[in-house]
Image 1 (cartoon, helix red, strand yellow):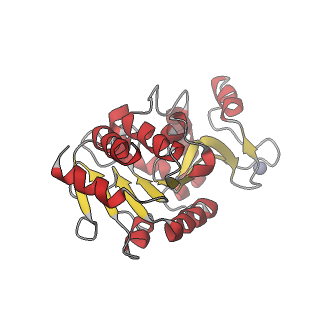
Image 2: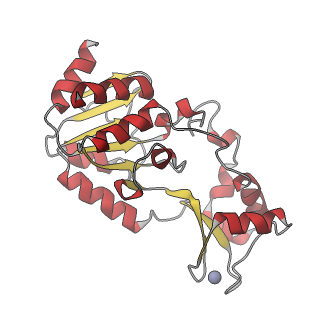
Image 3: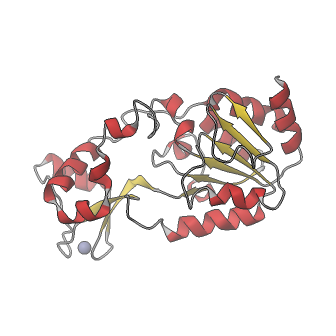
Amino acid sequence: MSQDLAYAARLLLDAKRILIFSGAGISTESGIPDFRGTDGIWTKFSAEDFMLDRYMNERSVRVRAWASRFPKMFGNARPNDAHYAVTKLWKHGRLIGCVTQNIDGLHQAAGLPQEMIAELHGNSDGIACMSCGASYEPSEIEQRWVNGDVDPHCDRCGGILKSTIVFFGEVLPQAAVSLAYRWAAEADAVISVGSSLSVYPAAYVPLDVASRGAPFVIINNQPTDLDNVASLRLDGMAGDLLSRLVAAITS
Ligand SMILES: [Zn+2]
């Protein structure tokens, strides 16, 4: 084990309520491109199609957004070792919760229960009416889309339907934010995995834990905006580093 990894393991050895904060970098090894990378997700999806005001006002934007949503936004991406390591932490009773900026559902796919996950940017599993709030099964809307309804509307009130992914210009889901801050207040350590820690308010979550003097370990393959605040940053791939770290503190 490298010196840094051994040091991180010592810091976390006695932590009983570890908060995991995950960003896009935890899913790159699952084949989902990082938003910021040269092959970032916005080379596949158009960022402007995820701006709330344009989506609400322009039919052509909605038509493109649904076309990128179906048949399956993230293809056949599977969880990787990093997602499974988070689940392992939970199984050992050491996880207070996982706060994620991701919308790919891979923590759930790795067996982490939904109630252990605060999805700050929503997820791609739900579809809701922007007028009356009615929620729809994606499979139902997908069937309508396959049948030629390229801009599906609410069948109760005629309102515009939208994925429960948080769009640019949209407030973060209050329930997820409250849960994230409750966990941050109770956590006795935090590990940030695959996040540049540059997006606020999300980055306040690990910062909140660290501000109380609790260990703050960053795993990322490039510098982050909070390296100077963290106990240390482990430089490398999330799958390798997080699984070794979790193995070291749960054995
Ligand atoms: Zn409606």
